[in-house]
Image 1 (cartoon, rainbow, N blue to C red):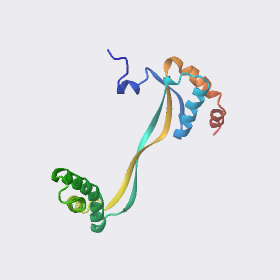
Image 2: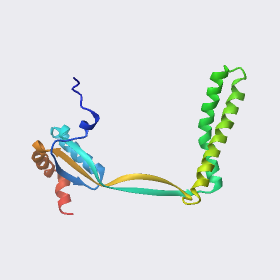
Image 3: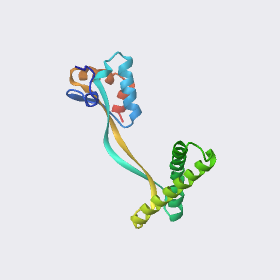
Image 4: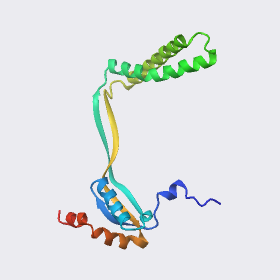
Length: 167
């Protein structure tokens, strides 16, 4: 029987209690570091991002030109892979450069074709590029119930905690 905890157990606390809430991750990290520096058993702690929101940053307009260029760029990696596979299966008899060039051309054609089909099927419903990220708006430090009071008491002694009470 294995004594190592499974992936789900690693992210669980028994009866967690809130011992601190912070606006920035770095503040929560500093609180845990303070507890660690003061010999608190930090294996009883967890930092949890709370109040999640999705942020989408628009990076540019999508046009046929940008779509085809993106397809060609993504096809370069595929083309190099295809060229190397062709070399493996042909034994390199045709020479390195010609086989790699054929693979590259095939990759660019496949990349531009697939992105063009995808863009055409979208029918102009998403004519922009973006990056999406999920972020937390606050961070909670949770602690096992058996040592939560000790953690709260230790954190209350931090100058940063006392200053935050007056904000």
